[in-house]
Image (cartoon, rainbow over all chains, first blue to last red; front, side):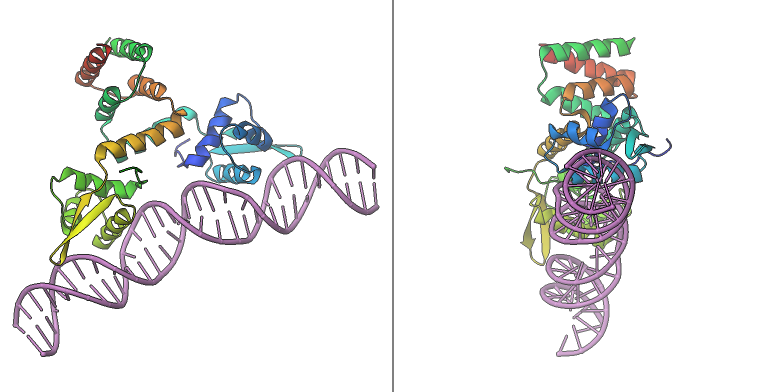
Length: 125
Length: 125
DNA sequence: CAAGTATGATTACATCTGTAATAATTATTA
DNA sequence: TAATAATTATTACAGATGTAATCATACTTG
């Protein structure tokens, strides 16, 4: 898992489905799960799956005439990589200004704020 | 400023330069400023500028034979829009899990943590 | 066995992006 | 004024992306 492939917006939806399943799933499982999420034709989803295989974000094993797909990269890794590129693009790489911006500007419920406070307290040690 | 245009990675570098200047600047100003940032030929940067104009992210006025470029969208707006799309893609739209992930996983100095704590305390009101 | 069906493979095509080169135009200078 | 330099405009081109349609093949069913 040396290199995290660059996963496009549409491809992320596919990956999220696959990550959310504990076991490998068929193309149809993915298509079914995506019905609620996106308005894509099954062929579109197959294309996305194939591209993800080509990028080595997904692997598959043949189970009879079916393919069972499974992730080759973990969600945590991808989130990290994606975040890095996002923070670099938008904030020039500085994570903290981003957090400041979010904490100040975004809508958060009291509960959420409390949880964040809790996390920070723990980090302070 | 109804619609925030979608600004690509390379284009962001240009926008950041222009936002950082208080007054409109020429293409050459931008080229000069970007020398430290990216390894692009001047023509490449001109292309990016033109695309940003086409996207209505930049405006310009002719000053003699020069063009003076200025932003048509604010940095804050763009950050917000970009963040939204990022959070949607990666975290399914939930901002808070993202913050949790960052606060837990990323490297932050004690000072930074202290500042974040401070901000949260204030938000708690 | 033949025809329909399910599944994966191949092909399609417009737009966006990264990365420029070249052409056109205008201004400056010898 | 003619050549040169500066600046903007047009064109280029490959790879990524969104969004599929069509083709091929294997399986099921009448």
